[in-house]
Image (tube, helix red, strand yellow):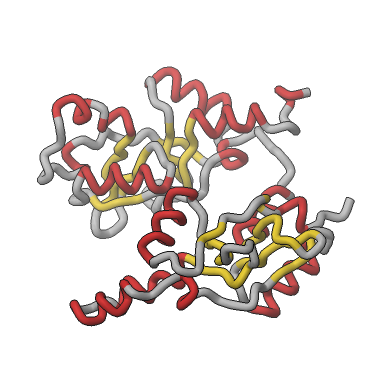
Length: 269
């Protein structure tokens, strides 16, 4: 079955008024965890689109009091892009990707019968690539997260907590200036400071715990056994042929459970 824009898009569009200040636009983008808003007038007519990237100009050009005053007077209508780059819900994914590449834009407004009904962006196309992978669950390599959230040992604890929250990660790998792994900080390591408060001078090196490593070719059974035996929720994935190299990824109890929940998993048959 040929996939269409409807299959990938984020349904629904969020609007803002043309006279919305840049500060108000920033609040809406943040509250709704989106990267763009449709600028619409009082009659519901869609005039343009304003993105988080557009707001960077307002933030970085406000280098002094005079510039800041000028930027604070700008509205969504002043920075929006128009006319809207649109695409119909029925267009195939391949054709949509071609249009996005040709226009050299990050997103398109999806329309149905001429009315905006959603947004499709580069991240949606990336997700479609990931969905093509056939589920495998034999080794650590099959389910581990290839990306790793990393910080230096001298990173303030508060900054690490903020980054973990923003990235949606439950742990951060601690490394030195040369990238050598020193330890890992998890949400559990931070819990005591909810009760007793955090010293602003405290850094992640003060609370990190030692890492547990597992070879990328190890079985999931081995990974699960190691987690259970050591009361750990995550393991750092390494290559036994080069154990001193930077880690290849991380595997957590969540990764294994997520694979169990996969519709194509043997657990869902």
